[in-house]
Amino acid sequence: MDTRDVSGFPLTLEGDPTPMVSFRKVTKSYGSLVVLDSLDLDVAEGEMVTVIGPSGSGKTTVLRMLMTLETINGGVIYVDGEPLTHMPEGGRLVRANNRHMRQMRSKIGMCFQHFNLFPHMTALENCMEGPVHVLGLSKQDARERAEELLAMVGMAEKRDQHPSRLSGGQQQRVAIARALAMRPKVMLFDEVTSALDPEVIGEVTTVIRKLVSEHNLTMLMVTHQMGFAKDISDRVCFFYGGRIEEQGTPDELFGNPQKERTQQFLSAVKEAG
Amino acid sequence: MSYFEFLSQYSDRIVSGTFITMALTVLAALLAVAIAVAAGLIRMAPNFAVRGVAMVYIEIFRGTSLLVQLYWIFFVLPLFGITLEKFTAGFVAVGMNLGAYGAELVRGAILSVPKGQWEAALALNMSPAKRMRRVILPQAVLIMLPSWGNLLIELLKGTALVALISVADLMFQVKQINGTTFMSAEAFGTALIIYYVLARFMITPFMRWLERFMMRKMGRA
Image (cartoon, rainbow over the protein chains, first blue to last red):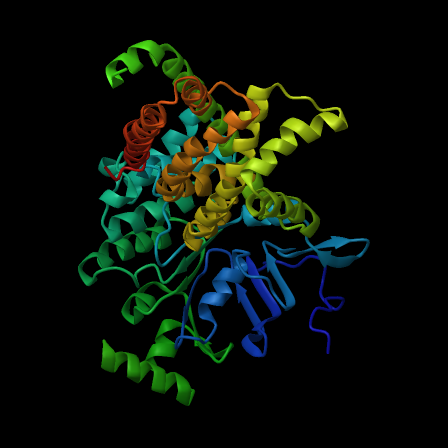
C-alpha cells in the first residue's frame, strides 16, 4: 500500500464547526520503526488537549509534525480547515510548496522542552525577533507587543537580560511569550516543564493556566505532570505504540480508565510521583 | 658591522617590508573570510550540483600547495587573459587558499549550533535565509572564532611565499639584504622576530578582543 497516496482526502475541511487541528490517518515511521500508526485526532477551536503516554509512544512526534519539524509519511494534517503539508492543485492534493508551508506555519506556535531561546538576544529581543523579521511589524509595535506579553508571563523586569542570566523557569516563560508574540491560533507545549527544577515548575504551569482561562487558544500539550494535565485539559489522550490507546475527559481518563495499558501507565506514574 | 649598525642601515627596508606584509595579511584575511563564509554556506546547499562547486573549490585549494597556487595565479592565469598585478596576485592566492580551510571551519561551526536553535527559528516561521543570518550565524561565529585565530596566524606566515613572485614584503626585503650583505643570521633572525611579534602580539590579542566582544554581545561576559 502506498501510504503517500492522498487522493482519498478532502482538499479542505468544510462543516461547522471545523476542527482547528485534524490528523487524518497520519503515519510516521523511521525505517521500519513505526512511530505513528494511522493517527486520527481532531482538536476543536479553543480546546486544550493533553497527550500523555510512555516514552517512545509517539506523543512528541504529534507536536513536531504539526510544527512541520518532521515530515509525514502518510495521511493529511489539516489546520484551520486547510491541509498543512499538502495543498490543493488542479483538484487534488499535492505536496505543499514553501509559500504554503510558511502561510500554514504562521498559525502555529511551539514551546520546547529545552526552551531554545536565542542566546545572543535579550528576553525582549527574543520576543521581538519574529514580529519584526517575519511579520514585518515596526520595532515600536513589536516592542509594545513583546513588553505586554513579557508582563503577562511575569518577566517584564528581566526583559533586558540574556537567556544565560535567566533560570530555566524564567527562560521557559520568555519562550512562551516569544511564541505568543506571533499570534498563533494553535499553541504546542512539548514537555515544557520536564527540564525544570521542581520548585520552578509552578511558575510555568501558572502561565499556561492563565492562557487556558483567559484566551481562546487551541492548545496541544505533551506532559508528564498528571496533576496539571488533569486540572487544565478539556481532553486527555493516552498514547501507546503510535496510537491513541484511550482518550476522554480528565475525569474519565484519570478517574476511570477503561484499558489495561492506561491503568498500568497511570499506576506506574502514580508510584513514581 | 654590529647588529645595531645593521638595523640602522636597513631598518627602512625592513619596516616597509613589514608594512607590505601587514597589508597583505589584512587583505588576504578579508578575502579568506568572505570566501570561507560563501563556500561554507554553499557547501551546505540542498542541491548537489551547487554543493559540488564548493566541494571542488575546497578540495583543490586545500589539496594543493599554496606556492603552486600562487604561481598559477601569477604566471598561468595571464595565459588565459587574466593578468593580476603581483601584489594583488599575492593576497588573492593566500586568501583563496586559507578561505578553503576557513570554509570547513564555517561549516563545522554552523553544524555545531544546537539543533533546537534551528527548530525554534523554524517555529517562529523565519525564512531559511533569516534563520541563518539572524539566529545561526551569530552563534556560529562565537564557536569558530578560536579556530580562526589559528588560521589567521597560518595566513600571516603564508604571505611570506609572495616574496617568490617579487612582492616587496618582509621576506623579500630580508632576502635582498642577505644577498648584498651576507649577514644571514641578522637578516633572517630579524624577520623571524617580526613574524613572531605580528602573530603573537597583534593577531592573537586582536582575536581575543574579538572573542570577548562577541561574548559580551551574547550576554556571557
